[in-house]
Amino acid sequence: MEKNIIQRLIDAGIITKNDIDEYNKQSATGLIRKQTEQNKDDEIEAIAQKSFREIYEKNLREEHAFIENGVLVNFKEGEFTEKYVVPSYVTEIKEKAFSDCKKLKQVIIPKGIKEIKYATFAHCENLESVILPNSVEEIHNDAFVGCGFKYIDLPKNLKIIGRGAFYGTKLESVEIPDSVEEIYNHAFQDNKKLVKVNLPSGLKIVRRHIFDGCENLEEISIPEGVEEIRESAFNGCKSLSRVYLPQSLQSIDRGTFYKCESLMNINATSILMKVNLPSNIRYLCYSAFDRTPVQDFVREWADKNKITQWPGQTFEETKTK
Image (tube, rainbow, N blue to C red; front, side, top):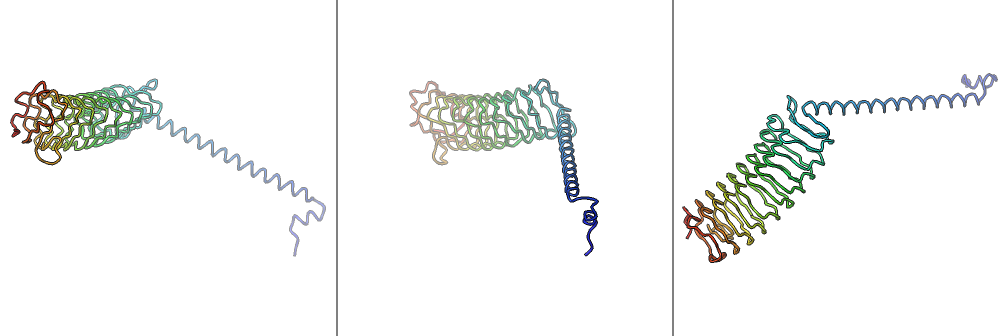
């Protein structure tokens, strides 16, 4: 078999085996060096591309948002701003920042934001989704008035829901976390599609007009610990058929269940068109149950002698005995 060229050169004394080994070593090092340099170039390119994307996305976000010193002051929607992710470095969102954005459909709020301020998303009628971080402790007055979402996941550390915060939205159901201590007047008024809602266990007062006009609300359970239900809280809730009132309740204000046309029972164990008043009731105002279909008023639960106000109009235009 004919020797290869390398072996023939070695046999002729032109090169040595050490020369071959050194050559192979240098070639391998060069190959490694070349590969390393290529990897480094690829890494630099990847970093450059990532930086470019971040800068591009940042500019895209901030093209419509005026952000100053970590504060999102104002947002102006454009043709392609259906979804907006608030930058993670934003620590505060100003009042009315997103108000009247008609094209906006989804917004994601970053961790660290503690307040959704006055009218922040007011009249964003096509807003379908808002993702709120658990850092949010207060939703201020009119924050989401007139918004189009059907559901919102409220933060588990939320403490206060302001006046009219969800007035006139398209909410169908809402779970209010037990961390909530106050829900102010008109908070969920005129939520025409609202069917189901739970109230937090720490609530003391159900305030004025809180569910006024929620005509599809079917059932409500007032948690133990609530002492007052104020004026027109459930006025015009036409589908409301069952209500649970806690023993802690002391006061039912005027018009509380006015025009609740489907109200069949209160604290009754079956559909008997009964009103069973809690034993601690001290104040029962006029028109509280006006224009409801309840027919039987069970007084045994409440000692009439302890009630400070019992006007004749309490059950006006009902068949209650």
